[in-house]
Image (tube, rainbow, N blue to C red):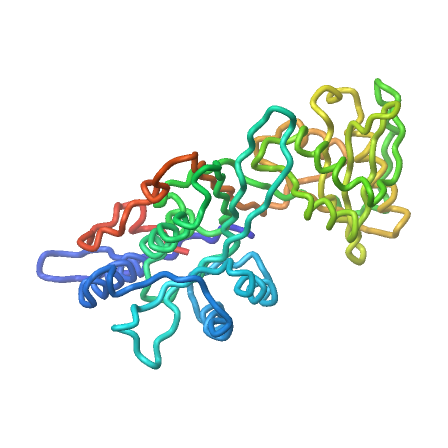
Length: 368
């Protein structure tokens, strides 16, 4: 999950002097030249992957020097079965028997409930990308997304989301108009069994209880009221939290006002989610939920606890650090692109400029 430092550039000498060209630039120029030799974009095609692509996709994931896949192999196979995988390949007229997939992109949709009166966009996650060595991620991603947006419902707004842990992917995502929304940072607490904290006493008395699996819809709506669309849980995610871990609910009278989701993985407690309704914040309810989760982790025998949160969420970071959590140095970047209701979503993605041979200085000196 950690960003990888840029590799050093290589120095090529010629009669005109010394020019620094890194391997990323070479790959991009080679890809552009290949397109020109084959007749441009017409020589490439994007299509939805089918069952015959499972093995080629596996090979691509094994050999691709530039890839980020946020799924296990089984998840990729499921994405292909569900028609959520796009592949870039040579067109039929240019394809050879030994040809492999040039690139792939995995897509996932997550619907979340919206508070009354709010029109929330449908979230579209780029769950994974992989590119052959001679393929420019920047150009290939444009081709993939240009085809993908044609399949979207143009009467509904969408929010495209991608997580990046590598600089080459940062560049590729920015090239299609995506912008950095935030960074997610990781924290850990070691020596959990030796830790002691004063008992939290919320300003407003609340009851902390175990959530019931039948509350999945109510808790998902509570989550939607507590977070912006980018960070909300879907019903699927909430159900997964209830099925695979523990969920505590803070209740004032008959009203649930917050919840805490966590799970145990051997001797580690994964603190997954803390949510409190806006009107009930600042009253110690989040602290009470958080403290109870850590006490349960101690009783379970956990020796450490881990969590992550947005870099911009200073308030939550102060709470976690008050309990002894410290940054691990791990992080990833969250990119987004809002796709409003429009008659032509493809306008959001520039076509590949086949005659482009220059790369700006920053891009030429950075590489995964």
